[in-house]
Image (tube, rainbow, N blue to C red; front, side):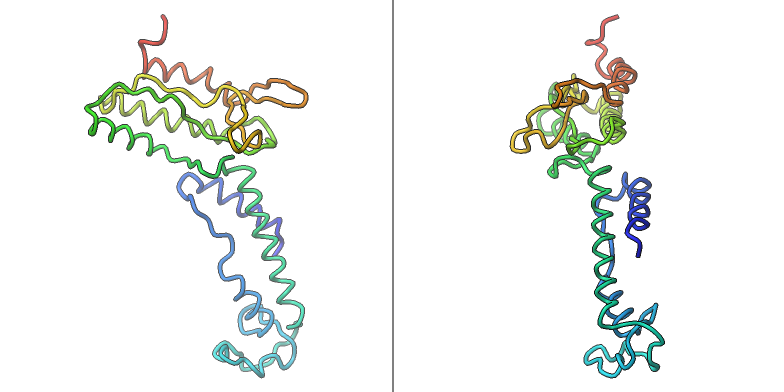
Length: 233
């Protein structure tokens, strides 16, 4: 298994299905591949050393009737296992770099804000609600400023609010993104970034992320739909 090929395959899966799949398993039954495929030769690609099938113990039901034509049962299972681990690590790395939020306690679940607001309406008599802090972070360092993940995050949360307010299902009066700038984030320090404006700490420079461009172009439309009393003519 070429770990770069597996990384690219995993990257495609994350990109295509990540909006629906939240929990991933990289390799299923890696022990079976290594042992039965390369030690005993009973599973494809049926590789083993000569005579390897003579003693299977409790795995006798997996034995083949004929000897393997090629292979090295003392080396290849370990080589295969090594490459499976590297492939797993490559998939985890690409997921963390491109798809996982910077803070492991945060999850992208726009339906959560809807459910919380509906519960608030039912339990407390539909009070005025200001969402004073909502956001998701990215892990530092950041490879580029094309922040499509958080554009998606805020877009989906705002659409949830828009549907609620249009149907009078919630009395939301304001929505504040966390945060305008990257900051020192409690126990995480500078290792995660919440800012829609990217701060280069060395040297100290401020950069405009794609997310902030999207905010300027699109967020005003949400303001007009959601909170017209806060938007001047």
